[in-house]
Image (cartoon, rainbow, N blue to C red; front, side, top):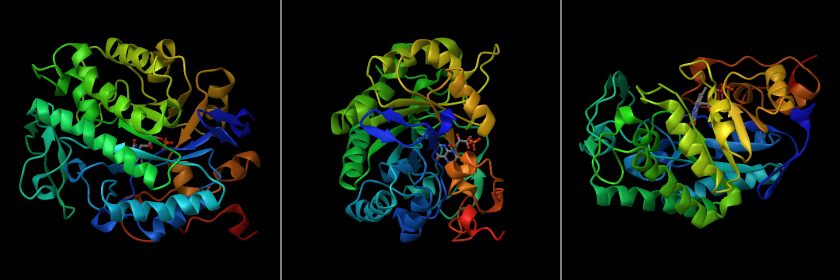
Length: 355
Ligand SMILES: Cc1cc2nc3c(=O)[nH]c(=O)nc-3n(C[C@H](O)[C@H](O)[C@H](O)COP(=O)(O)O)c2cc1C
């Protein structure tokens, strides 16, 4: 199977083409990574590449309880035990760099409002710092000099990730978080150089990517996008134009990869096809793939690597299971977010399943 064939990803040699997609698990109290997280990630070290859960680059970038950060010495130390454990188990691991922007609540920020490109309230409910669901607040628009500060926060997070021993980083430009909020027309009505024209809406994503490349080198940086995605109340007036242009800008940067969350764009084109058309480099696609559809996407050249989220959550030895065409553990949604070992580090490997 092509899924199980080797791949050269930038500076890394991957033993297979299966990427463990980023998954928030809310098991880092006080935003500091734990020993149990090291167990969880090391169990999944046979993935061609692990991408960690989204990790805030600043306290301002947090919007869910118990998500880890990458901006303090204590967090770097916490992550170090994870990268060590994954490497000792023979794996490769990138950190996903995150800022939630408006998908947050004032209780995370000492009573100050969450920040965003513009003061546009997301429809729906979000979390408070102690885990209650409440209607979203109207965020405060960042001043221009603060936007420049966000670039520095991402650069600093990327530098901390190096100290923590990661193999690279993924910029979270998807799912309605800060960079996506700047990109999409429905959340950005700024009139400075970070809003208005498409060129201006792309600017923050690209400047952050360049700052992160400066820390890591282009062959150890990926960017995740969700073209046409509406999660977190997102909307763009012209998805083809927006992500087409962005794909071109990323293409010339020669990154390790672009990671696309699969979606159907308005007129029936898929997100991955839209990006593939304008982007030359390594493409990871994710979202609803299984063994057969992932293999097919590789065989017909729609993608170079396949991201699996929930299958990896429930099957620490997913590549081996695909290789043997073995049955898969089912995931338990009730333990996705928060809690302890249950539904986290207790999914059995094949060798641990009673015959
Ligand atoms: C529990 C859970 C947490 C997730 N957290 C993140 C995240 O932190 N960052 C991100 O980019 N996507 C996140 N996602 C989205 C997944 O990476 C992936 O795009 C989605 O689950 C579809 O892939 P799948 O069908 O293989 O599960 C999460 C998904 C799940 C199920």
